Image 1 (cartoon, one colour):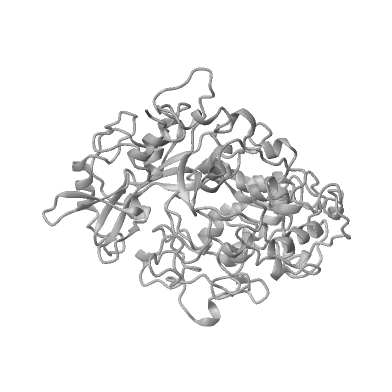
Image 2: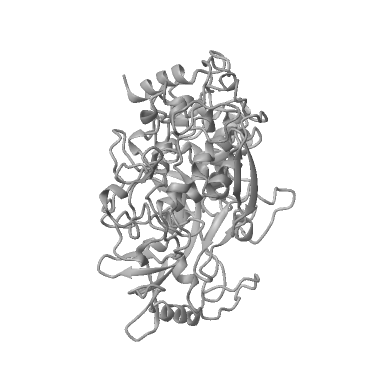
Length: 605
């Protein structure tokens, strides 16, 4: 039996469809246990432990090896694979998943510190900071509980931190260092925060308080997270420097019943995770990065009544079926474990799915992915540019600033059409054309001419610089680094030292618009093409359309004409060149089509 068949069979057993099982599962009476292993009562004011509570019946270790929990820390056999030597070419990549893999387009350009560091300048943010700031979109367990040697960060029973038995110093240990983003006062008080255990209710309780749990983690109350999510606390909240809510005080109160009922929790457990629970986490990144929405108006699958787990069922190991996208690389052994478009609509694996009937040549389906035509546009704004170079902070421009509802003219708006609409770029991947959201990233780096590799400079080092003055060349109210004189001045400053006395960069460069900018031997700015400066491509796979909105529904001339929005749509490459002008290329150029072939494709006479 194939892996996909096994996956589908297990999903029916573990997550039956609504027609097979009521959403309210039959669960025996639940007794909550504290971290000390003792049963809790309504009068107790300590957080409950999901491991002690749910782990008595369920295989907690197997469940928490699911890729949502580990995100690159372990492989399918539970072996710890995150490593300081994981990626020889890009040594800042410590794993294939969110925990350890460096994604240049992040809110603060930060990277997880190595386990073993040579000096303080190497450290960006620690595992503690990762739980605190990224744990809100994470179910707990995995790197929320255990360090990179497999030790609990803090053992409630022995009252010991994970590094103490080894006798090693925590100051340069990426799991325990008190340093985060150059700030030694952030700390890593695992003995006060406790660990972030895997929270079963984040998926299996309707109305789970996801935002409040995130505020609790930002407030460094890690072990309280599951209790907060269930609604069993009173909280005092404030805002952090980024404007996010954080908890200042958390008091357990098991008499509260607005979300979960302490005495009748077993009646509230749902076997099938409600899609709003999935969406609580996925809406944040998916919405801002891709403009993804999940409504009957924006996706034909939602309009037909499908839910998240209809396409992404889970198995007993708590892996959810996944596809195969450009940017996701965690647990690639599970790629394509979900049904593809062709599986349902061509091969008949879903008997309810309509079978496609296309009038054009079958060659199109071999060369163009289904979603390329069936995701013709997005109608929610999405991040388009991450600019870290000008201030040392993060400046984000969305699609509304540089794209429009006219794919052929980004500076023109078509009357009567939703002004938020923008059109995906296209790229070739694994032999087919796919739709992508292109994301331009502008940042300072340290270039190694021997390997031709650029390492991004941590933002905390940029923030502390005495920066050169900048002009607002594009007159948008925000000064930007773009002119040759500005780039030259910045590159000279980056040859200095950071707060710990170490060089900021040996060979500083600016990465922007497909080019690497550097100082030559004469001290003048030169720019060369570099792949790390190209726009990032983010796969699009939701917001699927049907009917007249689909590309090609109006006939061949919709694509194969002089006004083709398929080949001629504009893709932003650089928000401002050396004169402050936006730089675009057309889709055919991105696809590697030469002008002669383009002429034939457009059916020019």
